[in-house]
Every structure is written in C-alpha cells, then in structure tokens.
Image (spheres, rainbow, N blue to C red):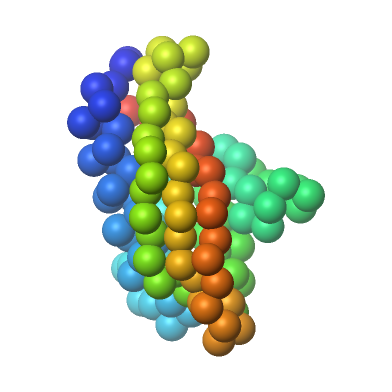
Length: 120
C-alpha cells in the first residue's frame, strides 16, 4: 500500500528516535522498541556494503549491539527525503548528515538510509 510523504516521514522519525537512544547498556525494552521497526527477515547492512548483511531481525539486533560498543549517534540530521515510486511508494530514501562518536572521537558521517515499509 502506498504511503504519503507525511507517513514516510513519521515512520522514519520514529525509527530514528528509537535508534538515537540506544547505547551498549540499553535495556532489553529499548532494543525491543528498535526491533519492532524491523521485519522478521530483511537485509540490514550494519557493517557497510562490503560486509554481508544481517538477514534476520535477531541478527540485526545483535549487530547493532556490537556496533554500540564503540559507536554512538550524537546527532541525526536529515537533509532530504524522497519517496521511491518504483516500489509502489513504500520505500523512503533519506540523505543524512550525521554526527557520530566512534571510539570516543567525534566524526561527521554522511549516509543514505533506504527503508522499505510494508505496513501502514
């Protein structure tokens, strides 16, 4: 089912809000809130495109927990979001200019998020 731009913005905002509060010591409830955004199966490139993706929700959660041992999102700034009509308006592509902290060092980290939503 196609989404409006406003629906895609709200879905991405909720997902990013749940990611932003995660740390390596977050509660299981915080990780469950994050996991509720994920399908049981999918492709999550947590280590970049040269590392095989996680393909199950449990693996994605485990991968995020590993990342958070040395990584923290300090600020997520969405530059632009577009709706991919090729996917029946269910895919959001967001260009970001994030600020991370990796191993205690601040880092500007531009990235592209691609999220495919399959429910309203």
